[in-house]
Image (cartoon, rainbow, N blue to C red; front, side, top):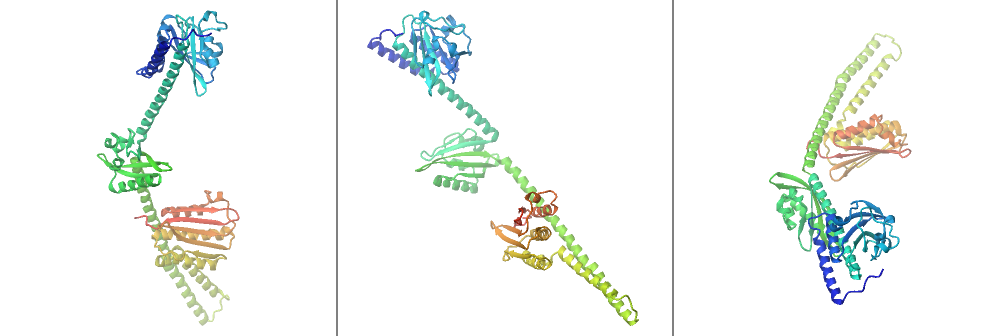
Length: 534
């Protein structure tokens, strides 16, 4: 149906001014109301400008197959509409009032009663005489349907333009408010998370030199910083001098090269000393760094827990070192007892046998051939075995000349007793080791060589010593044998390997094993050169 003739030029100008004023008024209508109330106010404005008796606005689902009945003007509700609010209406069942959704163009009807194929209206809907309905398209789909009706005279092109322009503005303001509400919800959630996690944030712009902070930051740095936009230097004021320099250097590096950082630093305030984790990312363009964004988290409790754990670990290390020392004292005592006590007894027996041999010769007694000589050899073998056991229980050279000399001597003797070639790399290692650590390393090498003889079926063993990170000893014992299944290395039944791990752990070291069938086995350990007691 064609709208009536166009109004005069003056009328057109007046209508344009009226529409402009209405467009400016729409954002102000959202103050202090809900979205539904805002939409109702807006449609009442459209209703008034078009001299209509009814006005409505509804949302369209994303599939454009269903209409969500949202609201009508108050006049419409009071005089002639009792349709259920917040219900849904299929587009396929809607009458000509939904043609704008189907055609995606404004629809005008000046004689509703005579219009064919009306389909129908929602139950309780206002009686229609004439109608304008317009679609609002956003991102390629129909998102809203707005309409007015029952003007006393026919609608013209100016009325259609008015409904169309104002409907677009209504949607944009409603959408903007939705986005703001979502931002407010996110901000509130972030604030709550920040309070729970004791996290604050800040950003700094190079060009302006201004620091913007989140509300949670005042609990971490104090209101002096968070109450205003401050220079970046204000963020550093809370640090003690040493930490302030560390943080200033990190910030300078981030500004110069875009280097991020993650530091745990101290701050001082009325409540005492606290620890903050400060992380920063730089914003860069081809022209350089434009700003920094940082997060600050209070990790005081975590630091306190870590400090307690560190003290407990140090205490355990001291106890372990003491335990090792006691065991070695006992081994030394047993070695001395074997050497001095049992060794002296066997020596006395050997002397008595020699004396008995002379007496037998003097009395011309003819004992069983070789009897005394065989007993003497057994005594000699027992003496040699006791001396060897005593030496194994406590390696004197380890105390006198150090780890390298003890390993050199032990590997030389091991080569003689076994079929393996032993090679020591790092014989020039001259850093002093704490006695418990040196002893643990020596025992681990002994156990590794014994395992190689029993299981590897190889021909060569390499023992390597090296200084790493200026403060740690790296030990490697590698054989060229058949290797083992990696699962067997970590099996609970591997008692010898577990004992080696425990010996390393007792002195604060780490020990790991790597092996695979056909590729030999490597025992690798790392030990601190600083005594656990310090």
